[in-house]
Image (cartoon, rainbow, N blue to C red; front, side, top):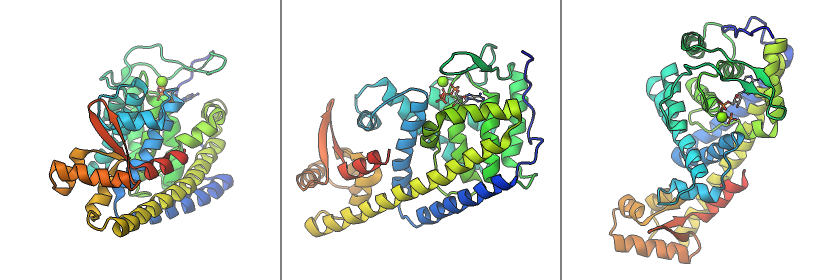
Length: 356
Ligand SMILES: Nc1ncnc2c1ncn2[C@@H]1O[C@H](COP(=O)(O)OP(=O)(O)OP(=O)(O)O)[C@@H](O)[C@H]1O
Ligand SMILES: [Mg+2]
């Protein structure tokens, strides 16, 4: 087989076809609606955390790292709970936050930042591939479908071309169309030994934030990609084999539209739950109610005695009393993990879990 040489960006074909523009209209509308609604929620951290946990779980599932929400929240809680798959998912989540903070801070997305993100996912410093031998295989037949570029120099040249395409809008192409191009190109460069898929999926959301199509990193395609997995691999390959950009771009735009709608529904539910719980605690437990308490209860899926002590500036005894009351009233469910007691916000947890 003749060796395939990955072309530089931009693609040489016209990307904005009629079908692409039609799909673009739907995706843009749905994403703008999500951005608008999310912008009205006061505590963004709650929202991001809730959405990111599902993404970290789904994104890792594509790589066959399967974990349950239950194991995951235990691993997140930083107790002595030990489960390798859940730990990997926690790394993926941490890489997402890292990337988001870097993009916010610098207003650009560079190769070095991408290297840091991948390093956080994999917990190693292997960096850009230096040794040949990486191939992409058909999952079922095991046959090699594509050999990505090898040699650090070539990979770096392609990455710097990609970096330009990401940060400079010389072509006037809509960023959502460019997102599809960037994802294809990144996966085709395949700069790392492992973790290219997960890193590429993080780049997608960072790009949306970079182009101000979202303020918070809350749109993730992993679930869509899992649901449409064989098309995902087939269409990546068809860009290469048939120059079929159109179907690939439409595929990604459709994913953005569907996922924006799903995420909007979830965000609305979370918001409604925060309001409902706030009202109930105010009514039933006016003595312990405070806005800070609600924030603590929703900050993650769980809280701890220490967080309440610190967050509300109360003594350990008071924190224990508060948590006891909240558990008795059914707002929290506690469990001892190792030496520590973790208090779960069951309603938030169930809501996020059922969205998955
Ligand atoms: N034919 C192909 N052309 C380009 N990229 C491909 C092709 N087939 C698969 N890929 C990409 O390679 C990724 C897998 O690469 P890698 O194993 O390095 O990443 P990962 O994060 O460990 O795995 P995964 O994406 O399965 O979670 C896929 O997610 C996909 O994006
Ligand atoms: Mg892998």
